[in-house]
Length: 329
Ligand SMILES: [Ca+2]
Ligand SMILES: [Ca+2]
Image (tube, rainbow, N blue to C red; front, side, top):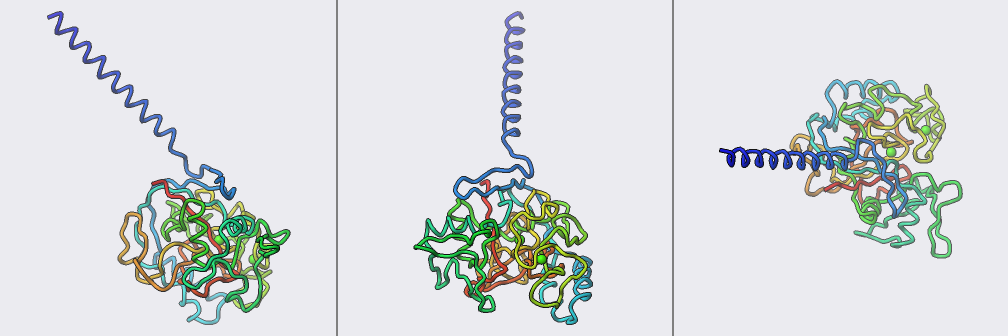
């Protein structure tokens, strides 16, 4: 009898110790998982990255959200066709579940891209330069990167501006160089609008002081120009100029400044067949996708769900740049 009591007591002690050990391990693991918006600095290019936890959101737009965007467009554009051209590519709204990842807090800058070019050269893939100032940009040279004595350097004062006139190949190569890749279209939208499915990174109502877009100071023409706000920048702005425009994870300029390359091939109909878990876009295509709108775009193009197909061969425009992700798995 005494032996039985002793064995039973020993068993209980063992069970308690095991439970304590498992509990400690679980607590340790939960301590090691970063919180939403935790910042980590990447050594290779000095980029700040923000942590986006695994989760689900509603990707795309409802009919009501698209009608609101059209209404906004009609205030500024006199062509219904111009409004419809890009807005109705966001249906159906559908649930997406994603693994966790790190995303760059800002768009990649001229200084960072110079570091990449000086390490790897300006290579050609599929006949397209990684970086080509003046390509497809109204034949005007806009780039703020110069080549002096075989070295790429940013023009003085433009070190912290987003790199532009970079091809999808150049953007993708950069993200591989830093040990990551371009965001998938769904990762990009999730980082921009979050689990609350905001229309803009900061919320559901447009605010021209939170974003660099086609505001009253826009330089080219008056078509679609919003004279009710002055965002302070007729063209590009240094990255991170609008902290109030931060998205839920702390990413800046997801809306506006420069449009951003993502990894996926363009397909107008992909949302109807997209898998729920970690969608990666169609297997093939002819266009890649740009996200977020730019300083060149009106308010309804800087919505988090706005999407546009862009040519791999010619789109090295003065309004397109990128940021990278590093997946956790
Ligand atoms: Ca502006
Ligand atoms: Ca942007």
